[in-house]
Image 1 (tube, rainbow, N blue to C red):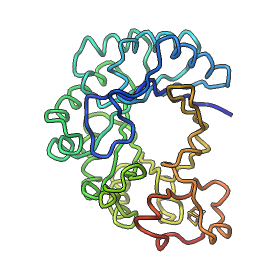
Image 2: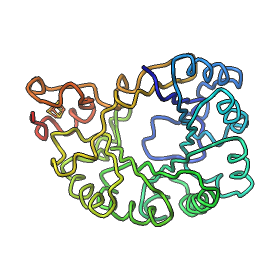
Image 3: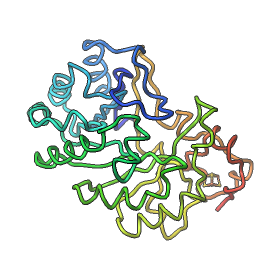
Image 4: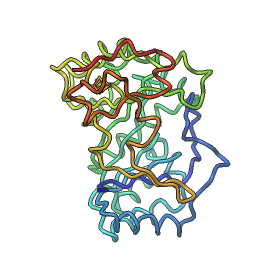
Length: 289
Ligand code: SF4
């Protein structure tokens, strides 16, 4: 079953986030025709919702055409995943609205410019994103935040949520940095047990938070509303070159289980553990429920 189609049309980006595995300025790219075909193929597979990812999808010249085509093809929700910089231009947001966009998810890496701009390696990026959030809010898009947590920004998590919720974001997804492709960045992969107190504090202040890389056995039952089960999103990723896969098959989502997981009542739904996480931090934090 496919409910969401996530389209990665290419990997170009105007940020240079530390350790990003999804950016390649000279990498493969879908033509506009291939994008249009992928949209129709997604609908034929049953997808009703579209997620425009990347790379940075706002850099594509065919973005507005793609959104309009998706709308015509019958996608009910059309979500843009972005660093938000180009949304700071009012006319850019006007065109998104006119094309039929419904939602924007902003990629956030710090509570304020100091951390965000350092981790994106793009001075001024946070200020532009905040302006982009204001422009998007003025057009009544549904707004959410993707919070990428490194070892060094984990303690900012509650403040990241608080400040950006004040700008109008209504839901947050927390991701833990993966060093799957970059072993030299292993010391930036946060330990779940170090992140957890900050995640709980953020959730106690703001309820709408989902945490994607913290399996059930690492989250207190009182906060299980944060749990995320990749297969239940029913999301298919389409990358350039006709490379498509369901989200739960992605190595950065998990897929590894311990022998003891067989005894866990969450095993049928749990997305498992990332191989890079187990290599770096070991198995000690996980035990069957
Ligand atoms: S299946 Fe394994 S990793 Fe998942 S919640 Fe249970 S013990 Fe934790």
